Image (tube, rainbow, N blue to C red; front, top):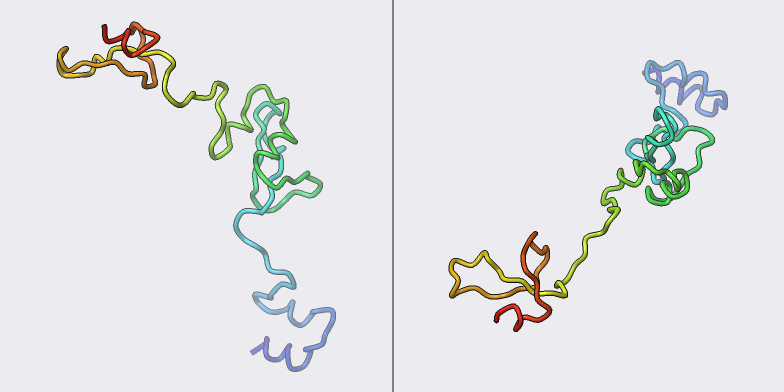
Length: 141
């Protein structure tokens, strides 16, 4: 084969001319695949408010890189009012985070099958228009 010939006759050839003449020559540095280990701003978007960070290959020359997508959004689009970059995160934060835990008030649970089986709860979310009470006892009276 031509590869065997190149290796045998030109094995120490520094120019790589013989190997480069093969139909599918190997490269000195194989092309990597998959996403990059770093994120960078995607300046190819139509405008800065529409910009976000990516980790696709190839990494354009001169782009700043960040270890995480969040770090990239903060560094490259930190004052972006549209929130586009942050919204592209796998688990983006919300403008008004959802509260957790019980409510500070109690309300009648109208989802029970009948009034004699009813009771009061302080479970989120508080249904719209439901009367509220400061204690469970006040709710039950």
